[in-house]
Picture 1 (cartoon, one colour):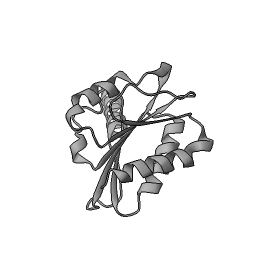
Picture 2 (tube, rainbow, N blue to C red):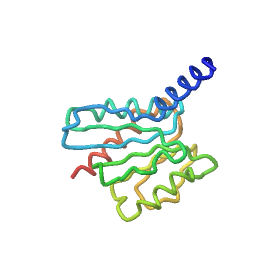
Picture 3 (tube, rainbow, N blue to C red):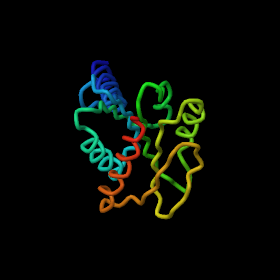
Picture 4 (cartoon, rainbow, N blue to C red):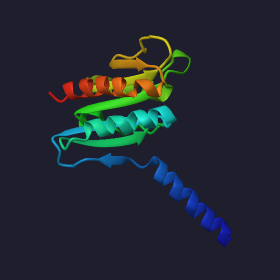
Length: 155
């Protein structure tokens, strides 16, 4: 029974750590950005680079994993900008991302979605979007474009 309790405690601790948000910057910064990602090597590197470029003292950044249902309860009105990076698997945006976008459609004008595809395509979303291949060699160019678009939402 003791082993079961310890195992349960460790399992719950890991689950909480995985679902917890990470924050960067000063909480009193004038601009707030929510970044939601799927954990892949490319997206982790993309978000790390994006955070470094945004974290200039004027932006408070919250990073969450957008696994199924993780976006529920998040309100884009709580942020100056929302960035979601999503795999364009079989030319589709993840269904839970589409569900969240539908649920916030009345106030999603500050949302930017990024999809990864090897070909150009327009994701079936009503928000601003950008598509790129999952190539480490293009991360600087892609994040420069993302930062430019996010900063435009601060106005």
